[in-house]
Image (cartoon, rainbow, N blue to C red; front, top):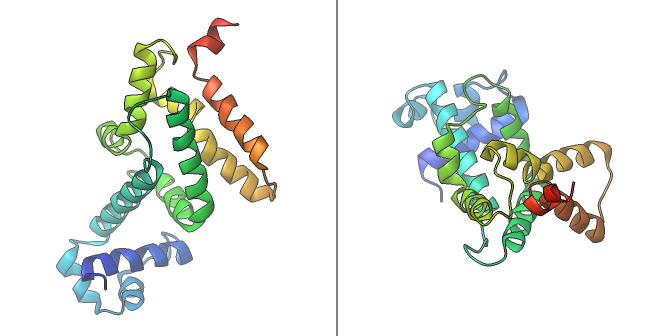
Length: 192
């Protein structure tokens, strides 16, 4: 059984997914959680605190899933591929969480987590980048640029394909991963 704080966070996530930020109220959260409204204030200062804590919880959960089962050594491409597939699989398995994250991304103050938070949450990814840059396998570009050119393609592609109903077979998915990898590789840039 969930503790009360986790129960409130989970209920808030459900209310947000159903009603969006505009329809979020402490009363709806309490009703969804099966608790009195006042109980929320024993765990969270106010609605903004609740939303900040939920946002951090969601971001931590997403990062944990994305970084799962990624080796800390070995082939850079194999590690990259695992990260990319983790993002792809997460998007396909948990579209509601992606929708909640999209809502946060559109609210001022929630859209850009501090860079230090990102470095900590995605340490395995940033370590891969640093290793690749040091070995001159990956372009020496700002880390946000490298992330956008590479791993964020999984998320963007999911949104596009989800909206259009197009599906990728395994071979196309592998070619897509390889193409996104080449977009940040030094050797691909040297060939131009």
